[in-house]
Image 1 (cartoon, rainbow, N blue to C red):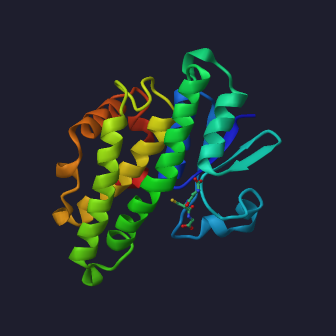
Image 2: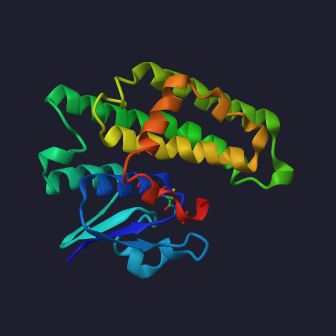
Length: 214
Ligand SMILES: N[C@@H](CCC(=O)N[C@@H](CS)C(=O)NCC(=O)O)C(=O)O
């Protein structure tokens, strides 16, 4: 039976898992949960993820939530040297894990502040100064990443690090659609902008674009 992937459109955490499934070419059935309808809080889903959040997977007897744990599981459970998510030597793999931790611990809070102030605040309550402060905080974080890119991809080879960071920045850029004065894209460090383009040209990328963003 194919792995079941519980997904919510626009979730950067669910997106990371989708990219990882596609990268590894693992057969899966994607079930779309609606945030507006409260699907993550339904008892049958809470039995899979008691935290009521996407993503989650069910793979045979394995039920798992937390996107970074799912990505590690996929690489461990579906071993294939041609499409590893944590490729390379122990130090290479440690670097990828470090980058995933840094994205979750530093980019996520900055991205959350920006999305809270733009996407999850009513337009009439937007505070341009607080929005600009959140943008600058994220910009500072991305300047740090620009110095860390080691070749075509973050850790050199394409890896879980790329699939973790890309959706977080894409969600932040989504704020600019709603609030054009944000000027985040124009301030992206050049190495980050060209790395994003490389991710966008991956053969499996376009399939994973959040359906409600199309
Ligand atoms: N740390 C979790 C974060 C998951 C998360 O926050 N998911 C959000 C969507 S981005 C969610 O499902 N929220 C439930 C809701 O809004 O009802 C992970 O990495 O999987």
